[in-house]
Image (cartoon, rainbow, N blue to C red):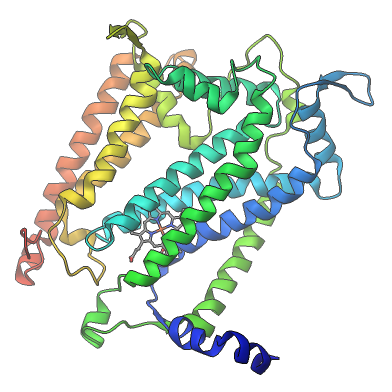
Length: 427
Ligand code: HEM
């Protein structure tokens, strides 16, 4: 059979050209793979969900006599199928894991300097992937059409619609009209969630992998000592493939356990949408944006060329936009090395490491601000806006400064001795 195929498709040439390629081994490289495995799991479990889900809000009568939106009824039906609730939970938790793993993978690339020339393009493709993963998760939020999901999606709708000039068009494309209210919203979010966004993700992941194979992976530092100038690693086939398969099976085992024990988003408990808005918080990856919205005073609004610049726009679009812009520009600003073959150590790059730590602390503080109302109800000083502003601005700045001084003092002498500290332009 192999010979028959080889005579026609020359698969042995393919094997020698691609599958014998050395793949450097480092535990942090599994983060990109875990992101990929979470995405594959999302597609597989998503296929099962689409077969049983009804993307409509038409009134439907349940066996117990209640009239609810069809989407809500179909998710109740999914939960009643054998393993239905578990598969829905695996889908839900895989979305969380994909976003967390993609973020940690980005941090690894950032802290090891793997975004530098020649990998700028793959850094940008990666940023696009992370953004798309978050948007895809958001479009899935409203689909169960329970009270909680509808309220959480309404917050996102408000942010999208607040963008000056283009907001109404963005809202129209994503929701097909006002949300909640528009009959088109669920069919529109559904087609984005199960077709257009996953197809774009598949195309971008393929591009990400092709670029990575073409440019070769960065290597752990020890490779420079053992085999200078060479790629040190295991062949793609069979060794790397076996390791990847083991990690995939482990991933499936862990996520199935989590999905079986922690049933996600119990829609029966939330009930169908009602005119009363329940107190909801978005998922953890949106909570920092929600936190910023909590601390921006409602009077911070003005008109610019006829358009309203609202607090939603400032907190939900401008602040994340600044961080995204900084990430986009990073590989074009930090051009200190053009021989990016080896992983850089965070201790050898105090400025980059300390700024990264500062931004991470900013995310944590903004997430904390997301609990402002809970702090107020508990009578905690953290419910005070002034305290939250200090936490948001001062704590990240102090973290950056202190970590910079610490890294310089702890590792500076060592780095200078080995000539590694913050190489200058052209190094
Ligand atoms: C759906 C999301 C993503 C998937 C499935 C994915 C997958 C992968 C895989 C499997 C690798 C090789 C193994 C590794 O280095 O971990 C890789 C490398 C890489 N990824 Fe991603 N990635 C994603 C998102 C991102 C993000 C958010 C960034 C950064 C903004 C990024 C930037 C890179 C770069 C620059 C490399 C080459 C790293 C090197 O040579 O050391 N990726 N990606």
